[in-house]
Image 1 (cartoon, rainbow, N blue to C red):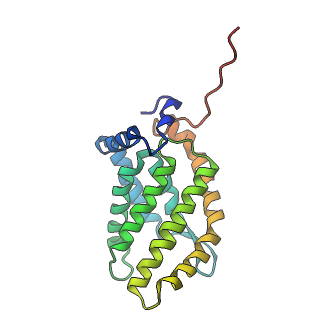
Image 2: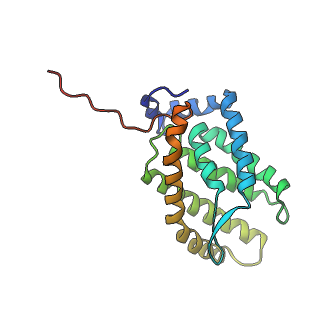
Image 3: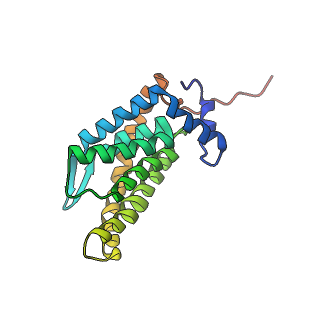
Length: 206
């Protein structure tokens, strides 16, 4: 349970305490149950999207992915991403299984957790998290997996992915921030997230 804004002090992934706390979530039945719910929701939502244009779609799964990663942290997020891709393939198989996409799904969840876990979720954090996911995972790894599987070279898929993911970035980041902003008070009330309000500064002693 999160009881005070002091838990936000663990927001830096460069501290040992951050990773010790994240690893302890593996022993928290509540967090593991929540991760299972997130996996199920991502699989169900994988076929739903908002069409914006030719090959430009906004999917809903990253909303629950970002929220879940913020709650249970990067260690559980890696396992959640692994389970999502493996189970999702059996529920909605699309072509032959390729293990590279398992890594992509895991890394996407991992990046969201690095930016959101035990942190004050701001518009800047949301934008940076989505930027990393779009460029490093969707474009960088995605182009590599496409080049391995198909006939055209890496740079062809890299440029194609850049155009798509840069175009979607502002809209996806805005929608994710609005979603997390709406859900954060509810999650904080139920002890799933630290309270997002900045602590009030005490006045000078009289």
